Amino acid sequence: MNHDEHAPVPSQGAPGSDRDRTKLYGWIVLGLAVAGLAFYLITDHWPHVLAALPYAGIILVMGMHLFMHKGHNHGGGSASGHVHGTKSSGDGR
Image (cartoon, rainbow, N blue to C red):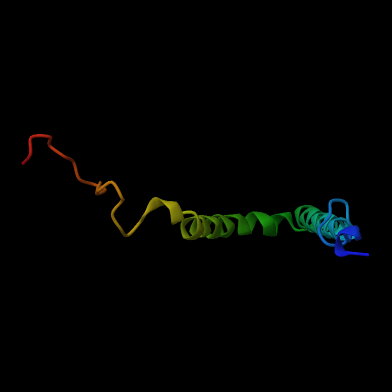
């Protein structure tokens, strides 16, 4: 009996394995927990949710600036030699 006769083990990343199913169930449970928490906050603590919205907006804007400005080449010149904020007059001066 050689190594080629062994069937692949289904728990090692094969589609439909127990590991994939467990991961799916984990995401379902997490989603239901978040939905339940959101429902509870909206129904029983609506004034507190409204009071927190301006702060949540500020935190979201700060997070967007921290994590979403990676592709804008801030702090350095671009590969084409274009410098932001300058215009070329076209006459060589």
